[in-house]
Amino acid sequence: MNKNSKLAKTLGWLITILIPLIVLMISIRLLITPVFALVEYRMPGFPEDPFSFTLQDRLRWSRPSINYLVNEEGIDFLESLQFDSGEPIFNPLELSHMEDVKNVVTGMRIALALSMLFLLGLSFGLMKAGGQEELFHAFQRGGWWGIGLIAAILIFVAVSFSHLFTWFHLIFFENGTWRFYTSDTLIRLFPIRFWQDAFIIVGVISLILYGAIIILSRNAVSRIRNGPSGEI
Image 1 (spheres, rainbow, N blue to C red):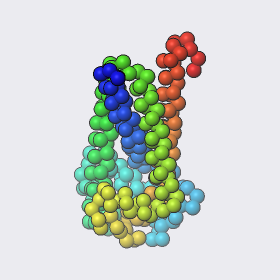
Image 2: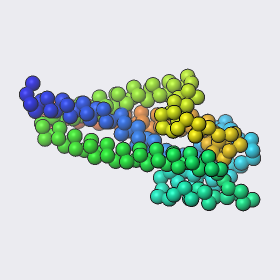
Image 3: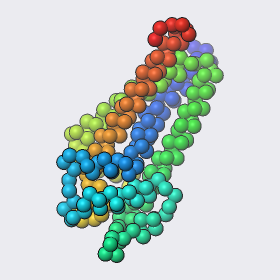
Image 4: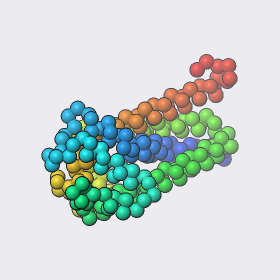
């Protein structure tokens, strides 16, 4: 194996590793929008709030809560929110958790941007090393690895979502900072059903993207092998 071939293989495997992570982060980012809540609250069987939030109440207060995660505002953006009675929407523990969530989301957005830049650099380097076919093989592998990752997540969602949800929080948040009473606003706006469906939708979006990557990469390899006039 010559030097260029070794380089091409190394760059290809780095690309393969990046693809599942990039697609997953893109899918998560697509879901951090009030549009998801708008649809989710209307899903059949979505639990009603036992403390009298109406659909309109949930839509009214979920919008700024979700927007906060991706805007440039500080925690005062949520701290200033009040019910019609003048009572704050969120208590101090909820506000602290929302700050933590925003930090995680911001970190993910930065990681996504850097990963995509790294992917572009790796792809360019692989092309320069004469590894055009290897590039698309790397994307294909990444697509299949991503499908395996999502399959594992969806199995956990089906078998024991509560454990998956707990592990997720233990990884990203300090223990005890993300547990709330059922009467707290965060739980009333975003009950466990909301997050279970969110995991599923992220999985579906990711599977669609992985499938597209696999198909497009396979077709690109076919074009390379058969030449401009070859059949796909």
